[in-house]
Image (cartoon, rainbow, N blue to C red; front, side):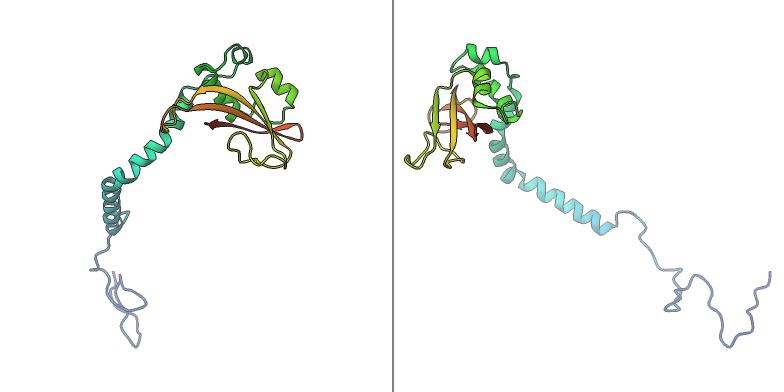
Length: 184
């Protein structure tokens, strides 16, 4: 094998050479691990910070989300006959999850709602002559009618003292547009 260099005015560099600088890079140590070590250190410190601070944010997050999780886990499928047969009971409270989150009542007329749920315990129409609705309402606008159905006692919200709950069905232009639970 011929190791002679071709006839050039300068000697050709041997490989591996960085073509930009002309320096021999064969002895440069390269970190080929993935992810690079600095990212591993950052990841370890981040995990440690999350672990140390988790009681500060984890406990409040757990306390806030627990009532919703418990209510969801105890839900019962909506049954119109069972709903009408009972008043102020825990069974009606658990069926309300499907009514609020399942879209069963959305777009229904008052007669269809009365057929499914029966006669409401109270009806409230917001007009300009009355200052406030019966219960707190995000839909306190002229022309909104709200029907209230008793759900018995509030089971999961840990307020001060005993509290009750009602299912509020809001109508606008004779169609249901919102179903919500009101704690009183």
